[in-house]
View 1: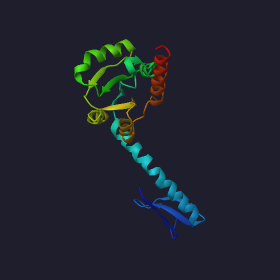
View 2: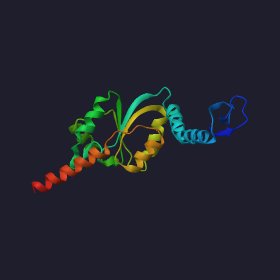
View 3: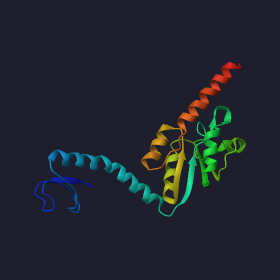
View 4: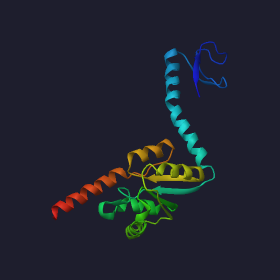
Length: 189
């Protein structure tokens, strides 16, 4: 919503910050500098407001879901479980969809690893590549309230952010788990 400054607005004896679309006064200030600071703050907050509007549009009436990736997110190298993330997802109490770039040919191995790790999930979607995740994400956003997404790939994390989805805090946890695994392997090798 664009705004502008008026000096001759009947509702303000100073500098009025006015909403373009309806003429509503957002603020009345003694100095032009004060009005410009409010204008700057309104424009700075505008992308956040647009992001909130997108989030509200996509979740209207949808059932809650969590989406999680596998590699580097709930499983570290060698299919070792990342306990803190798995425990957080399991504690959420909503349906969990696993979305992985792994190929369908690895389904049996993947299901076995997820079950052994103790991840409680409802559906496993194996789309074959990271790029193929985006259309699936869009499909779910149109149907469900995605309450959180757990993903370690920076591009996919950015995609979730652009859609207004809250991200689980996994990237640092996964990195720490990987470093610890490497140190243990070197120590006992």
